[in-house]
Amino acid sequence: MIEQIVNTLNSIIWSKPLIILCLGAGVWFSCRTKFLQIRHFRHMLSLIFQGNTSESGISSFQALSISLSGRVGTGNIAGVATAIAIGGPGAVFWMWVVAFFGAATAFIEATLAQLYKEKDESGMYRGGPAYYIDKAMKNKTYAVIFALSTIIAVGFCLPGIQANSIAISAENAWGISRTNLGYFLVFMIGIIVFGGVRRIAKFTQVIVPFMAITYLCLALIVIGLNISEIPNVIFLILSSAFSIDAGFGAIVGSAIEMGVKRGIYSNEAGQGTAPHASAAAEVSHPVKQGLVQAFSVYIDTLIVCTATALMILLTGFYNVVSPDGEMIYSGIQGVEAGPGYVQSVFETIIPGFGAIILAISLFFFAFTTILAYYYIAETNIVYLNKYFNTPSLKFFLKLLLLGSVMFGSLKSAELAWAMGDIGVGLMAWLNIIAIIILQKPALKALQHYENQLDESEGKDFVAADLSIENTDCWAGDN
Image 1 (cartoon, rainbow, N blue to C red):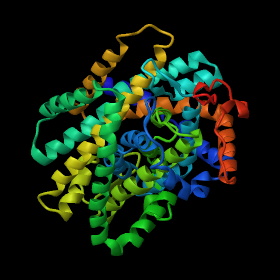
Image 2 (image 1 turned 90 degrees about the vertical axis):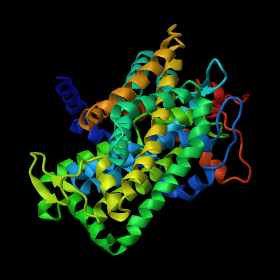
Image 3 (image 1 turned 30 degrees about the vertical axis):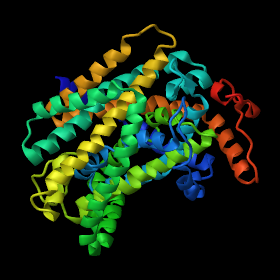
Image 4 (image 1 turned 180 degrees about the vertical axis):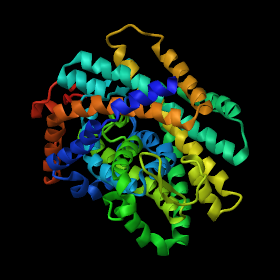
């Protein structure tokens, strides 16, 4: 009965209007920013390592690491595998589309988060959609709804996916029972989440680059061994995406749906999660962090997700089914769509060790994502505490998240992903509508920043000079 309820909610939230909204918002913001994801590509790279930590904020790189720890997770591995299994190779193309246009969406939401950030009781920067909805839209009710939805989504719905993927991969690699693995995850995550945002930032800034580089090196080995097949794989992706090959005609709709759904789950553009880390950064101009976060979408989808997709397609480990369950194109069958799917790919290249290597990589991917989820949920609790006296809510969040980790470790992958999709979809609906309404301050800040780039000496950013109100951290005297 639980699965029926979850699947019904999932079908309602992830209807065609949400897919149109996600893609349409990305196209709109790309046009409004004059395709900054292309114009400022090189500049984005130069900004990643700029900025320092302060008593109030973390560095740009630490903020990037936290947001990437949320973006680069099981969605880059199991999510891509599932998208291909259900939507065919064409789903990869639509993930690319979401990433390209989503970079502009990520810029808008991250810049808004920087503009409307504020300091919490301990003097740390906090911000995110709830903050800019409250301060810019001046709609407290909407902001509270978003905060509550986010706490449910990232505190309960989404951690289960990450834990589920770790449990499946560990079971495949070492035969560890899911129960024991769940207890281990609860213990390890508990140590860090009880240590606060700075411990999370320090942990992720070391682990995230390491895990991403290691995984990409492994992917390059697989791709290198099959380099001659790259042109055929690219054609396969395009023919599936546009139904050039008649065999894929019946699943084009599924390719678009899965590409958009898994693309947004993976790179989080428009979802409303990444702005929380963006607001925590100490930068000299809000647009700088917006550009850094726009580039992180490229890292997530165009690099990491593409690496996974190429490994799967180059080695032929995929099945394509129509919406009614009919097999249209079959690769090697009997492989679970998810962690086991990609583990089988690694096993063909490194027999006896492939599944173990993938399990280790996935552990770090998913583990850091769970930590990012906790930080996001905690930030929304800090927001709620501005208006409601809920001193025990943080402790309850820790228990909720750890419970979700244990629950996800034990339950089926289908239920875990369905619950995660509900969380992602609910946040996306609320956040994208908000940033479409609130885009003007971010566009003003972008124009101000671009004018500075054309001048020999830049001026301090003062929000009031651009008629942007309720931006206490950018009043010019901080």
